[in-house]
Amino acid sequence: MKKALLGSNGQAATLFNVGPISNPGRPSLVRMPVVMTVAKPGTRSSSQWQAIHADIEAHLKKAIPMKPPLVVFEPMHHLTFSAPQSTAPALCIAACELVGGGRDQAMPAASALHIIVAAAVAHENLPLTDRPEIRPPVAHAFGPNVELMTGDGMVPFGFELLARSDDPAGGNSERILRAIVEITRAVGSQGMVHGQYREVEYLLSQGRDGGDDHEWADHVWAKKEGELHACAAACGAILGGGTEEEIEGLRKYGFYVGMIRGVTAHGGGRREHGASNTVVEDMKKLALQALEGFDAGRVEAVASILDAIMS
Amino acid sequence: MKKALLGSNGQAATLFNVGPISNPGRPSLVRMPVVMTVAKPGTRSSSQWQAIHADIEAHLKKAIPMKPPLVVFEPMHHLTFSAPQSTAPALCIAACELVGGGRDQAMPAASALHIIVAAAVAHENLPLTDRPEIRPPVAHAFGPNVELMTGDGMVPFGFELLARSDDPAGGNSERILRAIVEITRAVGSQGMVHGQYREVEYLLSQGRDGGDDHEWADHVWAKKEGELHACAAACGAILGGGTEEEIEGLRKYGFYVGMIRGVTAHGGGRREHGASNTVVEDMKKLALQALEGFDAGRVEAVASILDAIMS
Image 1: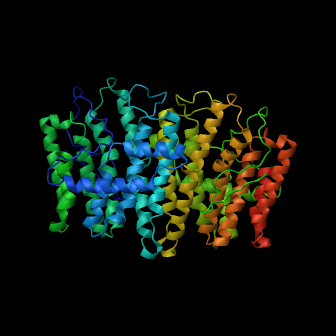
Image 2 (image 1 turned 180 degrees about the vertical axis):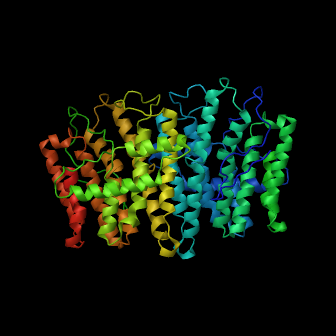
Image 3 (image 1 turned 135 degrees about the horizontal axis):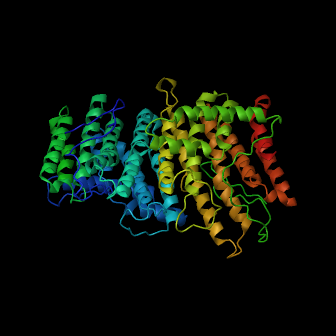
């Protein structure tokens, strides 16, 4: 059963039901920090994606140098580069290139996505008095106060990187504003933050009400990974000058990529169940269908992310 | 002794020393949530400023309705409207009108400023394990987890409001992107967040090292109020179509308004000292000097904020 609801604004509006109903005995799948599943060296797609990640990292290292005041830049540097690598920024770049744009056109948006997701990870791991027991402890290089405030500073910095990439001579300011709106929605209260809320709610309720694990998990994945990757791919297409049809095609493709990313992350999840492999394969088919309108010669570069995240 | 350093990017770069050196016996002045000092009813300027605040609030109530999902909108609504009212958003509107712009041109930026400052206040009041004792306890309508995440959602929403106010037909996208960059810098790691960091550092060190209270406080005021108001006034001028000279004049004016706001907020501060009234009067003179290039007939509306915050 699938119910992919792409709302009127093009964003997946609600729930994406991909599995059988309720299996309370199944281990929890819902905890899924945004970790890049690195493709095995030697697979067809690995070097391409590794090159994109390296380019994004190089861009971020220029944007966030280790300079005074160290009290600001040291924790920002640490939280930015120690965060698990998301696949969303690289998808943003690949989508831009697919519609004929240059890598540099999507680089500020990809960097902004990385920084904002890294800030979200930092805030997820803050010790708070009302959620002390729900997550495995993580190593902290800085105290909670610094990690809270650094995350608070990183989010505006991500938007600054994108906003100041405006080139008045290039006439790209409309596209940049549109990408900013896409990202604010994907990471905001009705996007990633809503997924985080549902995740905490789920983790706090575990073992108490025997709720529908799959429904919770799918909602969390849709918000934290599906819509994030949908936004990333759409932003790449917008910034690369894609048509509305291309933007929406890549948005759908990104949504399925993110959902597969959520389902397969951390192993020990649906893929251990016979039904779940089918679900992942079905999502892969839907993802590839979303790319059908594109030039067959160029689509392989974007489609190969599926192998990278499913390997 | 004054040292107002307006850096190359036009923002006050570092410290604004406005008082005598170190007086360890003096009560701490550094705690200063961004509270509007409401002008006394009947004073010349009060109704004008109250009308601007009412317009901003009406705009925000439309932008943040109480609608489903209530789990998202209820805490966002609460944190937005329960936050102490900052003078910065109203100054943004007044600056826009001074350069000949309409109120609606600055309204999205003013609303974004209110939301982002309200999110900062929410995060300032989060209980964290490494800063349990430094602030007087505040009433919390929601748990720390919800207040953390709601603040995290409010910041992108503020930028969304501003970014989607773009009117392709109006050709204002360059101005909006410039205002976004202004706000990201003023509220980010080297702006308001840096002030918050110095504030916590100061509060934690109190009574331990006998540091220079005035120097700490002035730095905190410069970051949390001076640069915030400088940004607000500059954004108003940018969005209203002001010249570069008008933008920089209003930026300077805003900086002094914010500093006076910081110095006079919460009473019990510098104004109790003989020297401090002189300092405030000197800053008022500098603020008015920054408005000298403007039309004398129109400048009164903006200048009257000085009476509102000093009354």
